[in-house]
Length: 121
Image 1 (cartoon, rainbow, N blue to C red):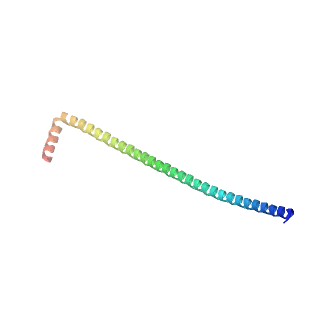
Image 2: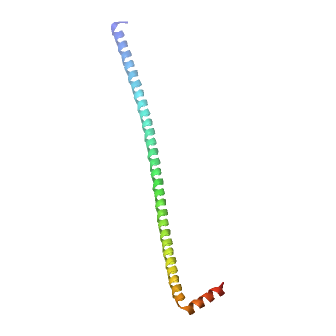
Image 3: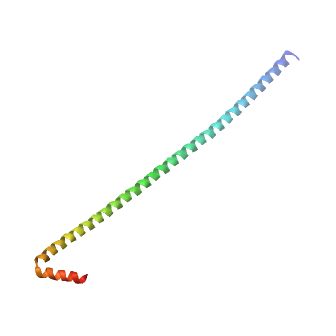
């Protein structure tokens, strides 16, 4: 073999090594890109789950607040009804006391009332 053949063969080996190196670099690059895409997708899905959980938690808080507010309004209206009933009972009690006072001043009416109450018993 002469120098030209050896040089040619060396050049051919160098080209082969370069080609192999480029192919290996491309494989590594493709693998890295795939790993990056997978990792990115996993992170994206994890963040979506976190956001959904946070949204559900806040939605439950809003529902609880609405229930509490409704309960408070219901209690307030019940208290108003009870106060109105109490005021009515007190006014009826006062009116009855006034009537009784008027009746007790009139001896005949008072005697008639007492007889009616005794007979009713």
